[in-house]
Length: 117
Image 1: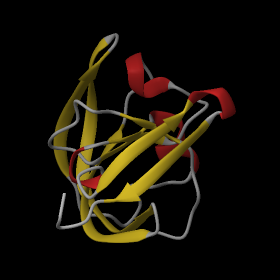
Image 2: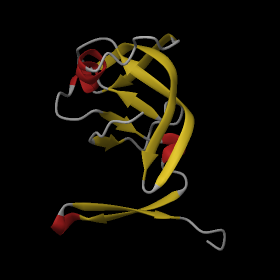
Image 3: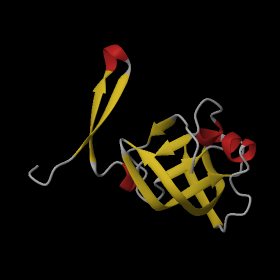
Image 4: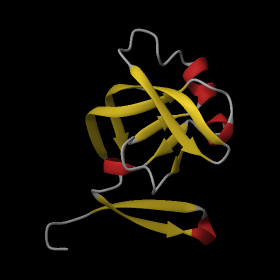
């Protein structure tokens, strides 16, 4: 939706493709004007209350995902209270890609899968 951010990869996130951390939700007022429902997200530190809604778009690995389900943490605790990242990504956002981890150089590649694989 027109902003850049640093995200953690959450390979266990099947339902929520993007979960925004509390401080980003508050600072960027991500809930203002957005239709949402109640939700919960779990991680280190237990469960936190979220609001679940839709992103108009999310850009990752050269691809744009539209009308994407997202969760927005509304409690400043646990795994979703990390002030150093915007949130977590997982689920359908990772499906089109093979991830290549370059640990020595601190890089991550999103290589789009082909039909032949």
